[in-house]
Length: 230
Image (cartoon, rainbow, N blue to C red):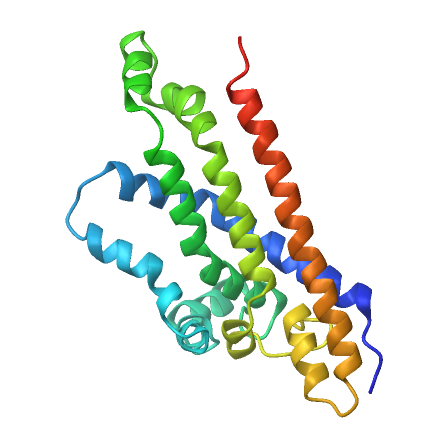
């Protein structure tokens, strides 16, 4: 079996997961706010669409991404013709697939964090003359940070472990879209690759445990900061 470039696979996996998580954060906060604080026609439909990747097979999600963002899709074709941007079968496409699969977890965590905020504190800030934006930045956002942090970790981990949507939409291209999970799959499909697959699984477990430990440490520090006396 051809040796796997560990630095390439790990670097690509971390880069794809970080990019997917970063681009999901602002939209996730916005949608979580709409679902938690607003009542409007189509709210249930939006909620269902956001959480659809949790119940749909990942391959189906990848297929829909291919229909929408492929070179012949309505969005992908427009991006290619207008800006020369191609998402299918690229690293950006792998990040998009991971972002879509991790997005419901991020939205749900942010929404739970937002719903745990005492709205009386926001009302008090508004009564004292704070604008809606000031109240959000100084009161709501700090109090919902634990939920945001938990969502970021869940989304990042989901992207690291994503397989079905990625291989369907971005394929399994060495050095371009072959992330850690795809490298494990490739090793298992190669004669004599069981040892390499086991090593990659160990790396994946180490990454997951490290992410959980860092998230727990950060969450404790954050809660201590929020409850510290002024």
